[in-house]
Image 1 (cartoon, rainbow, N blue to C red):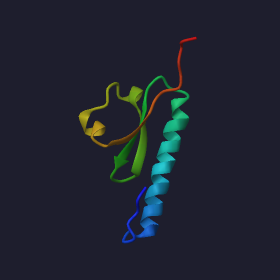
Image 2: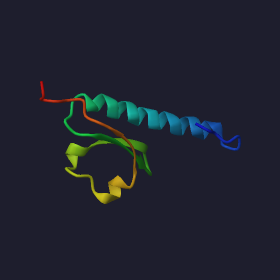
Image 3: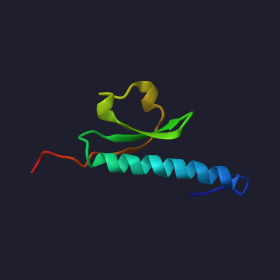
Image 4: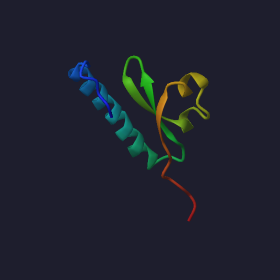
Length: 78
């Protein structure tokens, strides 16, 4: 990852921490869901993790904000 020397490192670290928290939540939820988990950019929260199963197919407005997808790890196949 390239980081400009012009960036304010305090905001960058806070933004990165929020992203990592949402990504960790998506990974944790993926073990207990049959659906893909998505990390979305959110204006108020920074980043949020959502379960595709909560929305059936994600609406286009949400799809436009997806920055990471974590596939489900739960399976009925043996």
